[in-house]
Length: 206
Image 1 (tube, rainbow, N blue to C red):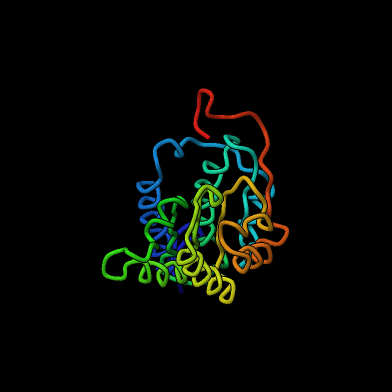
Image 2 (tube, one colour):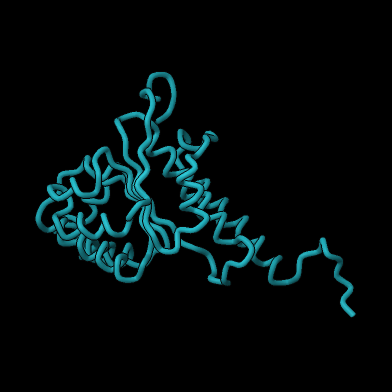
């Protein structure tokens, strides 16, 4: 007869709690200070976290409405949810977060020792990829090819992406190339959230 009370965690649950605590701690350390302040997430974002099922999330809106802050908080809530009831034992989910300008620079063809291609393969496989301010960067043809490698693999494998951008997916062809823009439109589907409001940078983080 088991001596465990209903309030006690079994061995598996204890391991998951420890993993969750460690994973959230690492994520918090990597989160820029300005985006650690608590904010309310839109209902559409909560719905995406609760039932994303491989669908990606596209956050759009004018400059300064809080897209980046919302995305960082969404990543954290998504990470929390991976340890919730009914979730399979999958180890520690890996989230990779990039500003578009830094990502495109890292993917450039003259990166030392083929680091651009190594990064491309890594970003194909991470559990959640967050690319911030996608329309801000101006890629070369080479970078667009690497983006296609990344997004096509994630599209095929149904691995989610969170994108922040001030234009819609179907308006991204000049930045990502038409093949990536098309895949993003399908990956996000109806998970496109328009954020509205004043410029939050006028006195606080956005």
